[in-house]
Length: 236
Image (cartoon, rainbow, N blue to C red; front, side):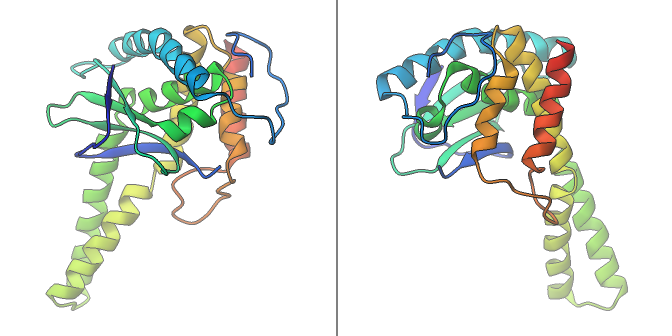
């Protein structure tokens, strides 16, 4: 595990963002107050190190079991820039190594190890399910189709370029909600196999604003995500 500040990426998949205390694994889900005090910085850092130590090897085993010819050597990093909104995301290095980045705001916002474990499992799942490649393919297809239609419709070079840009954006987002639900489901499995409670961990998502069901939104409604996690957790 390496700790960094700058991060230059080729691609980005499925980030977790929010503008917004005992940590016993496999504990029962319990209601948590919105106003519950945050953990101290030292406790939050200790929780994060413990979660990475337990979840990373499980995620790598799942990756090797579910993929073929995919780099499963996760590089987990921390962005320690100040005054950033809480965020975690998965990307790839130039060599294709999967990188998962948490910033210090998200680590501090998590109220227990279950939440950190679920977020880490969720981000690892984006790589295991190869969501970056699927997004790129969808974006290219969307741009190509939109450009052809614009050209047939008599658009000039500038109009075709604009259509391609819009088509690429629409294409990249076309399946993003499905990908988030897939990552939630597999993330629950990974967290569980690492000894954490995925239902309790998924509570992290339900403290952030509900994205609803917006056109071209990148994340599904929180209630839909809760159902997906509960369905998987009930089978574990």
